[in-house]
Length: 133
Length: 161
Image 1: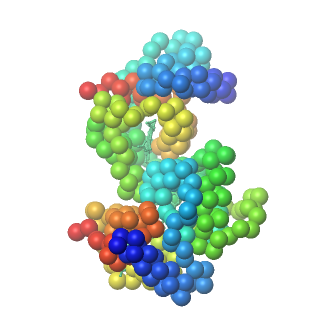
Image 2: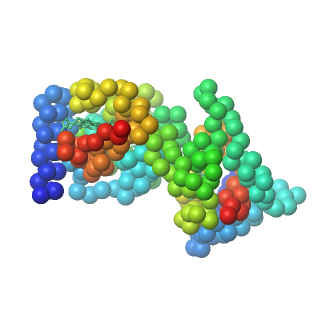
Image 3: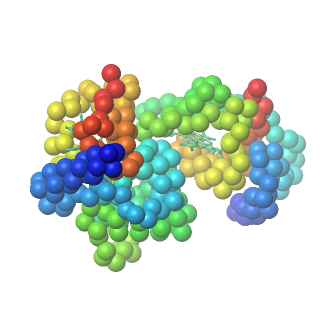
């Protein structure tokens, strides 16, 4: 609960200049607050989260099911609308609006993992998607 | 020219659907569009024009956003209230009754399961809706290229091969 409030505050504080780097910095402070032994984000863990498959209503789903197997490529919603690529290298609009980023983490972590993602997972995820060239 | 076509198209739709469906259907888009509706309800599919469903169906949809056809489409309270009002007030029946406090969860209504939709598409086989370039009947834009502007005229229909 405390961590959530802190995340919100940090997100608000970084809202003015909010590229992926600023959002990652926000998640870093939140991850440190949640776990004092936290070291740093890892693109490898972010990749694992992106491709992690979970059984949902009889189907295997992952972040990649909508966001595409290659994050440099566009994805598609279950209602057949295209989704812009997730990799920041090909889509400069990615992770530039903290409210939007938080809204979709809230929805999509619930859809796939049936729970909320932790600040560490969010930071890992953004680190992975910003590391792709 | 374009305007005239659009207008005639809308007249056709509404007269046909008004004639056959007690509820009536208002396809023209409201003059004042809610930006929140356009962006929030247009992120997974096109933002379906409010005139395609009666007010109580939009209410049911807005009540069930946390499990919306298997997806979490939930919104913050302020945005939800704005969109709910926009949809209900501009709905097929211009519903202006006070918003119910809490409604029992009901199955989420579909446009594609209304009687008028089935009738309008009686000549489109279900296999066509499942085609690669379409996906499902809910993907109006695959065939009606100006559906997001409320235009469903025959001239603007083309079915992907």
